[in-house]
Image (tube, rainbow, N blue to C red; front, side, top):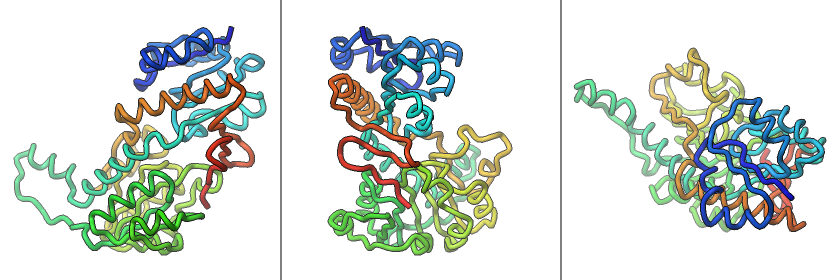
Length: 334
């Protein structure tokens, strides 16, 4: 009998697999085991070795993949950026299919992006601390109406963010390797080059992480940011060249609002923790009940389809690109 295992109760998704209606969809497919704890690596490896299908809600060590070799057939990752949680080249080598879930967090991440931008524009974290300390002097912030905003990456999240910025009255420009012109017109946007994007008053990153985008945001691009501009990143911390953002922020004339960092968590002495005016959050973008439910349902859909011989949303390691069996080829933007 096929053994379907959710390895860890971390993150709140596991409980959705154990409850209705998702458990009722999984049960006819085989034996379903849903962990309620957060295991150590030894336990994680043992559980993976006993699974035909893994519902992945946490990082999967290489040792766990190897332990499952010969039995493990599918890792259904409950999110989009599978490469950050499981080694795709190793999975491919071992003959393990990896799937992901797309479009689950478009609205959730876009709304957080807008929140980060507003928090940085008006220095809301500092305002909260000031009031709690009895300081009511206040300071000037900036309005976003009429400002230029560059959306770097025009997938589902980028398009949703661009629509929100358009409603705010911002002048939207977009960079992407391939731009949907109908979607661009819907947000009254204009296409631009990547260097042109970094001359905007606001730059917000929405690229997927792959070989072509890792370190894409270089010191040279960050040097183009005008004084007073705001960089928002709710995509992946690895998009930025190591140390480049901290160095640019150190000049003291731009701000950043970041939901994703590299590494996560940051070391206690990371300079991003002490740069004035920087807004940080602990990778909250997808963490809403609605998005988590879509993630869990998408993972179950992937398991159902795979076991029925019609796999969907497969992610392939070659050559550094994501590839999906359904919805066409996934874009890895360069």
